[in-house]
Length: 474
Image 1 (cartoon, rainbow, N blue to C red):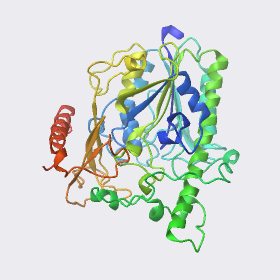
Image 2: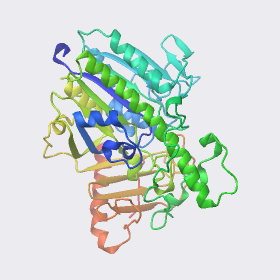
Image 3: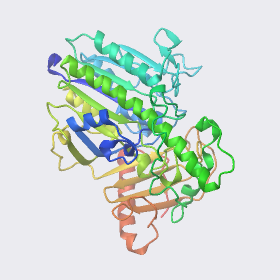
Image 4: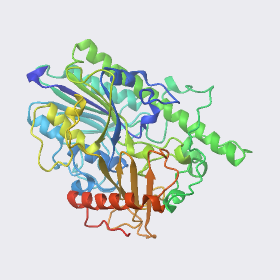
């Protein structure tokens, strides 16, 4: 272990829901190489994002701050390269750093003047925006060029090349950030026929009618039945299907291609793990697998993310480091994406900057939960009606309850439709309603819970400094 400091391999995908991983109990696919990480380390069951959309989540991960602090609140508010991030701090303190794949923090804008390109890395190559699956263009420090092949393979090839050429006397921090399995879902040739002769099981809430909840649920335009189109699915929808048959046909087409993209990710994760094993540095390397947010896999009849509902809010998080983390361990503690930076810095033996708003969870990984560890978390989605007609909202989640407030106007945010609606509340009793099908906000027996959670929500907003625009009603 160079200089006594662990290497860091941080693998992140885009839109990979935890319930599409066999180590999280998936009913629909197997991920043997991801399971290797879980088997050699820890699976965290309650890892959540603070804003379920790509650009803001990535900014939160890099800076260890909420989006109202780092200013990256929407897809149209990119991150300035001058922001201090954990890779910059690691590099300043002897780490070799690199990032390959998806950056998605403003790169590729015609007016950027390289302002939003990756900074703090010894080497990098990223796709512009979402990037392409096949023969993708990459942005390099010295220009752009198309790289032939499949994106997931290419990003892994670049990562392996960095590892092979690294200075073995210095620790490394490698960010391998895949485009997959983001829409549009385009599998590689190897997995093109996977699941072809089977019917993928339908989720429990596939036929949700959006009753008993705020109007935001029924207003959202991310329904498999109504909002998945031929250009999304890359195929003509058969004629003569009943509405129910067409919904199921769309789901099968969508979910199979989604899972095929994940199968390629799993294979390529295996390539990285095999390299670390062969080099004899597996035990010296912190290996993390996560996604920038969750995703609806037909849950509530939806695809996409954005909502504070569980499937969108929950991030997978697997971590292996045999020197400290017990094999096949599981944590139910509440971890947030703003905690990642602090945890990496802690493992590297570096001080955590005072501006960071998360907290290292290294002790949790060692099986020791601090007595004052968080019991609740704050979430905010800013892009009112900007995509999929999802209303802006914020809320509080505890281990037992979830309180959501659809403030339903732009409140000064960028990239949002300036159109207001009557605000609404939702409360879910997660102990009795884990699928979040029935809001109990207006039920008298929950009045005391509502008051307690509102008080905690307002106090948290004040403590975090996100009370400038936040406003709600009783």
